[in-house]
Length: 260
Image (tube, rainbow, N blue to C red):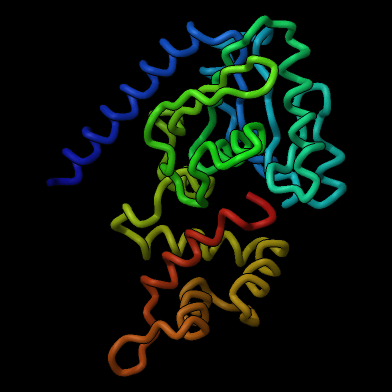
């Protein structure tokens, strides 16, 4: 299949998801928008927020454990509910969200969960359900079907596949971890772009060293990928570093970086 046809097919599927979501919005009294706390503005769905309306929207800043305290404290508590869905004190985090839902004073509310792929929707749902009700994995596109999950207080929760704006650049979606890396073709192109971004950011450079167990020293993006490949033992014939595998590892690992 040509790139143009693949693009048309991808766009068609995305449009169908948006159409389905708008229909589901009409059936729900409350909307939980799950956001990545490291990139709140970048993972907001402005169109869906407009459709939902302020009176039934709860914006959850997830993955707060990946933020420094100063950054966490700067998040507006009036606008965002700060949550760590993987916290050790899960009951405290669970109660925080349930209380926000119950504060809406809806009888037997139907709650729609929305958000970009890989922002942690399934982890939040599992936190609320108190069990593995939704499949959670650090892979964009893990949730593929709509499912209803019953919570305490007669709350009915709807899990949906992640969506994102149709016109958003693929490099931005990769930056946010919203695309399944294994479905890409131009690994090296996107890997080099991300490598350059990380090397130009002091915090991300430190994260690279810790995550991949490497030492950086004024490296170029190409040299960074070579270090990752050698550290992981990914070598081609002749001992050349396999930069394609290094690109994949960098793109996958970036979802755990401290700053997006």
